[in-house]
Length: 340
Image (cartoon, rainbow, N blue to C red):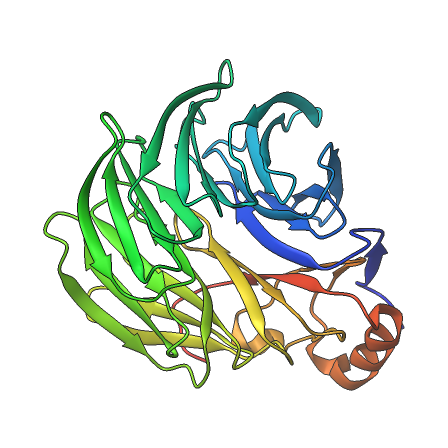
């Protein structure tokens, strides 16, 4: 039986990044098909497809209330969107190379973009005006983050450094020397997390630029990371096909999500850390046992929603694998802190 299974049309190419609203009710995905898709996470429906970019969309972001979306593309632009109706608000033009990363302040009034032109740019999202350019990296800038108020920014570069910025005047506060590929900030900006190809994540204090914890548990490169708003929970995504949820107070593992068969590329956390989102490179779907208390919905390309399918694992898995062969998907998980 296919009871509890719903297949919806989604992206036509690989999904590359994802974002969640603070309450976890909205998800946004960015894809190599030049679009973003906004999803309702409660029932898995596709709300809007955001079309406007002329090249791959590398990254995406949502304001805390989910009303504003931001996308970053290889077409050297960022685009601001109204999520209520999926309309384009404005195009942010200024970079002279691929835009690899983007982020929004909680109120959606400030945006930051990271580019291969070795800079980050701060934008006023109300009128699309460039506020200032952050210069200090010697290599491609591949990811960025903003604190909730937008007073602090974080950027990571292939030059082997991450820089904490004061956005009010564009001055660098700290330079963290670590080869990283992904980053995130807690809402107040006091805690930074960096994901590294050396199989670990690191937690840093942005006040003094000192290393707090190194999160070790993955067996392959860590490609994505996220923090809950209060910074108490961290999530990491790895090429070892797992995501790990961490307690940042002591750097210990809370649980490991083993739902993927191939490299997990990116991840996101809702504000409270109760909902997690992950993107994988696999071409088959995975349905997990609900007794582990992490049962939720699968959002895929095409999107699949699975409810209470533990007893039907083998049968459902076989059917979905055939239906989704060749597609990438991202998975909505529940992150209750009880261990499996």
